[in-house]
Image 1 (cartoon, rainbow, N blue to C red):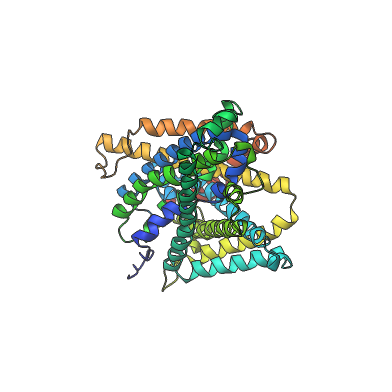
Image 2: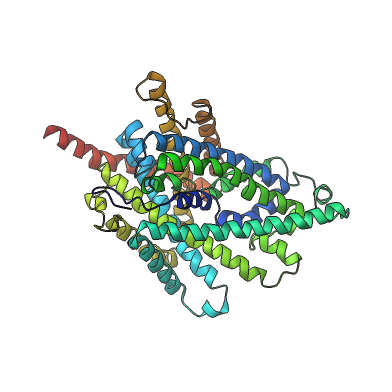
Length: 462
């Protein structure tokens, strides 16, 4: 591939984009978090995953139409600039960048924690492992986007392969029990343990806020779109496949887990897949699943570094970040300064994660997590604005319209709003997070007035 003089290289292939779309929807939220949620909600958790999966699919369809309309290097930041104005692009861009930065810090720590599971690494200081992980992902992202895409392809393949293996083995166990009338698994087991709603009807609704974040990073496909050769063809194909993969891997895995073991056997401290395989007496299953979870954390870290650097460069394009972030390396055409700044923040984050008490760090993560909802809401609002322009005749119809727009956009926005409200009832972290939002909003507004509006006035006067 040849590089354009001003933009990114188009080194991401169709298989890279497909796996980035798939890998972004399969993370540690499923491999680790599902155990606690199954314990809290029982089999009804499957409804929460299905509902959130549908929400995420609609968000991706809205993003897909925006990409088909105009592929953009900064994804929703660029679209917000066009359809919602510089203020919205500035606020949501920095809010989302904050989310990615803090998520990356957590992933660095997670890689170190998962490696400490094995005795071989237990004597190695956690900060050393975190630093090594940081150097590795930094090298992958600085070499070129092709190498980033290749690593993400294989990491996503590992996650998909492990889930496929579980679905196959779990399906065989369930089929064997059905044909031989075993009551220890399947619907008879669910009925004997309180039915589909053993914790009440409100349990899956309360867990929606945790489940929706399990799908975070699915929007990375919009950021990666600008670095593939034919995004208008590749991105819709990848998004169309996401809904079936969500149903198969996420909803299918949760449903199978609920059918294979009583919900009260799952634990917060253990992957539900490990819990199941242990009942089968599979040797070294904990080690195998720890490798999978380690790969998932490393994949998230790798993607966060990639996406953060592209979002920072998009902010620079709108005048909301230093112009130096716009610079691309001559050969590989990657935003090396934005990557370097992100790596520096991650390095500080590793130190802060060691020094700062847990409740402060969790509060910061809570604020950052809401950045995901903000980014998704921005995508939906941009699509609504695009739809209005199409109806008025200002913009031609796209070949990949959002289904049911604008009604589906507003319904999805309402669902995100309900999740945001539910976060406030999660005392104390959720309540503190929502309480901090107005102050963060004021800070973003003031900085926008000082930085962006000042530049706009200066440019107009000259």
